[in-house]
Image 1 (cartoon, protein in one colour):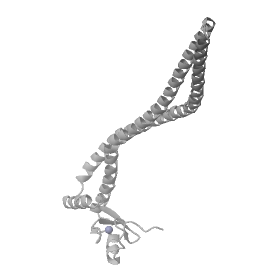
Image 2 (spheres, rainbow, N blue to C red):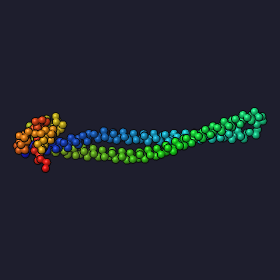
Image 3 (cartoon, rainbow, N blue to C red):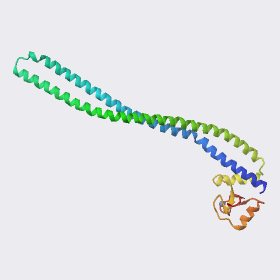
Image 4 (cartoon, protein in one colour):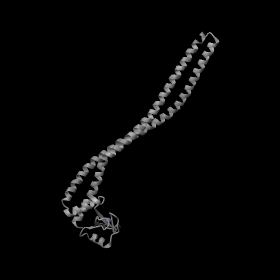
Length: 237
Ligand SMILES: [Zn+2]
């Protein structure tokens, strides 16, 4: 293979790595934002479930307080029953006590309902807290991973860019310009293998004459369909 093509093949391998790394490095802030978003979502989900439980617990306390107050009133009324003079007053007194007792029973029913609710919500809340602990660990891990990938990527990218700068100096200017022209237009892929009689860039079945020329490797040939530069790669066994 002529040196020019060997150098361009090397350049293509470098550029493919550089582009992959650049994308990784550039995408890091967005990847971190996505981690943050997921983390906040699970945080508010947990918050919501815990708030439901807190509300139910408060409701239960309010009911209990109200039942206690009414029971207290009943007690007071009863302690005064000996002072009642007339039958009419006594009937009224009984009615009042009955009404309060009825209210206490209703509140006790409500307390039972809210207790069932609390039992259910305690399970949901415990589950949500457990889930959140997992999510939190996952979040820390993902962010650390993205940050490490970003800083490693930047270092590696600099090494590759230095290598590339050194390589550019060795490639004849015309060949380099042609390479860059194709690279910019053909999806960052300018130099491809001709293998099994196929252009590995567009999978065109190559004309036999061209394939034979590429095999000789005496000059740079391009694919008649995609226009990429071709080098020979031995057929698959
Ligand atoms: Zn092609």
